[in-house]
Length: 135
Image (cartoon, rainbow, N blue to C red; front, side, top):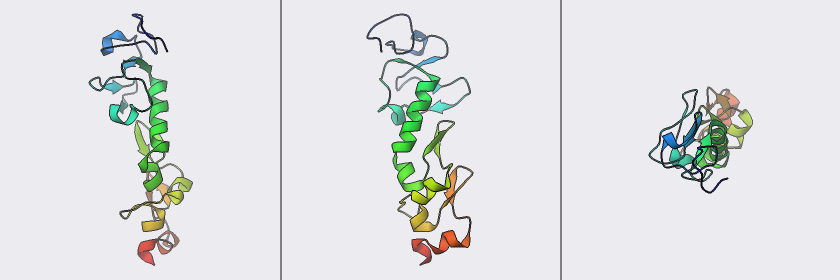
């Protein structure tokens, strides 16, 4: 990444959105992080994965969101491990089944073992029977 530049290219320093070229966003808390498809990204969720005050691409935002979801609490506890439209969602049954949920969430606790419309939920009687709350 460049340390100082006024070209507004990916990785260049910025202080506001206008400092970055078209199709790039300035990664700052006060800047709305929105890509061309209208997906809005939360600065607080991505700040561990992107350098603050730099021009970032849609691909950078998507990659940071993917890491946030995969490494975050929502994946471990609720099976929401995939970033879809900027939000962590459950896409694979395997992620739901591996979730360790507490507070009545997760496969082992409440039978939420199947990925259904972005969330983990029980699909069969067997999902419920194997859970803590059904024992």
